Amino acid sequence: MEGKRGPVATNIHPTAVVSPSAVLGDRVTIGPFAIVEDGVHVGDDCVLAARVVVKRGVILGRDNEIGEGAVIGGKPQHAKIGNIYGTVTIGDSNRFREAVTIHAAMEPSRATIVGNHNLLMVNAHVGHDAVVSNHAIIVNNVLLGGHAIVEERAYLGGAVAVHQFCRIGRFAMIGGQAHIVQDVPPFVMVDGGTSRVVGLNRIGLRRNGFTDDEMGQLKTAYRLMYRSGLTWTEVIAPMTMLPA
Image (cartoon, rainbow, N blue to C red; front, side, top):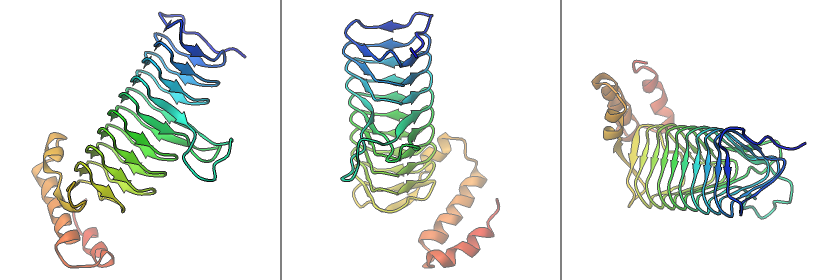
């Protein structure tokens, strides 16, 4: 079955290679030497720049911009991966800059997921089975290992490396060149030089409308977690007593 060609101003460069089974929305632009493989779905108003490669089965929502040389849906980097694996699902209004790579999930029934309104800068890499939520900023040369999770409005500075299965909490800010080998709680700031939590992401929280009362509660929670001398197990009980 042939894919749909959007009837409204879809623009495919003559040197691009687009599979007949790809489904393209309206007002899609595909640049020179781009490749769109079998079964790809591209939503309305997407722009694929020159030399972009979108691998088989990838789903792109609407209004995504993919920069030159990016590869979406590449084969997972795993020593035991065969020729059967999953895919990638992208939401809406994301901006992927030049040479971004997002690898497919390991299992055929699964997908690596990027949500909505994210910015991935030059040469960022999202490993297999990773999840990037919404409104995250991922700066140049960031490496997300397999199964990593980046929650809403997190900020990862340049060349941050996130170990597989680690979670970056919402509104967290990770300084450039940090190496993340365990989960990062939400709302905190990690120093790039030491890779240690050094405080709350106060500026980010203020910019996102957190009130003085909410900031006070977060400060109390931070002190319990990092300055009370309690173990993580001991911290749980007093944390539950804080206002919701």
